[in-house]
Image (cartoon, rainbow, N blue to C red; front, side):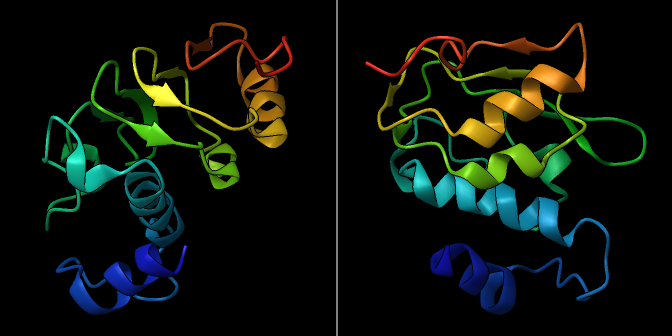
Length: 131
């Protein structure tokens, strides 16, 4: 968490103000990158000076909120951070084909389950206990 915050504060060329509505989303995306071994991913088009909507396999709506995230077989390694559940506009989340461990964040499953009837969550089965 601290590494993502440090990137936002010291390195991120977007230099969003503290009251920018996209600041939390950008931090969550940076947190996801660092929590899942981003420096070793197969694709390195993250943490650029462009909007997170322009990063690899990220799609956003016209208002700039992340709606689709497809990181299938990208080399993710680690546990999905609970904070991902705060991306409340998410319609599709696909992270299969990676080495994800730990427990499924309960808030993530709750949020994804209530967000939309058409939501596609292919990270792992939120209805089953973790292996």
